Length: 178
Image 1 (cartoon, helix red, strand yellow):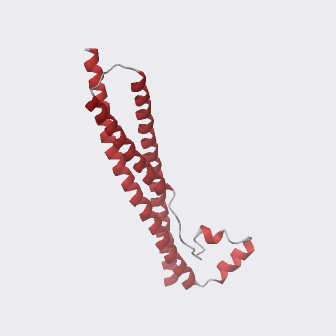
Image 2 (cartoon, rainbow, N blue to C red):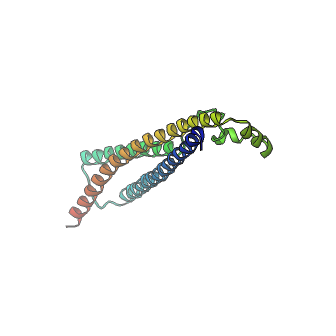
Image 3 (cartoon, rainbow, N blue to C red):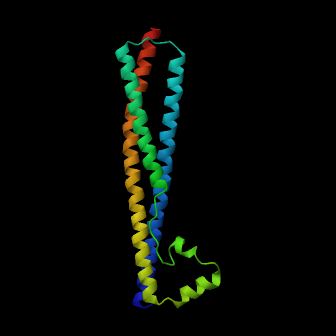
């Protein structure tokens, strides 16, 4: 195996690892999005239930504080959802001419044209295309993880607010019962 073939094999191994990292980011983003939507659903159900029942009477200050917390919670949850969706669907700006890029491959209308293009590439050209694809997929992975990290932080912050709201609601209900 010559030097170029070794570099191509190594490059393909790196591409596989980056693709696996992208898949993990997609899975984590889906979980964050589902958790955020789940918490939002619970909060909406509780708000509807609180408006329909008069179990607890609140002073105006307590009521405004409660609504302010709910607003902050919704705001943080919305931002978390926004970032998790961006992590799932990053914008691809590349117009790569690499045989390793799906956008370029989809431009071929038949297998014979693609096969001709690939066989005409020298080992050095294939090596260069792998390097370009490594850069492109690494940028995608980095972007996904940046959005995922932001989404998790906003989910954590909204979870803290949600927990505070739930503790406060439980306290008020228990105080009204006893």
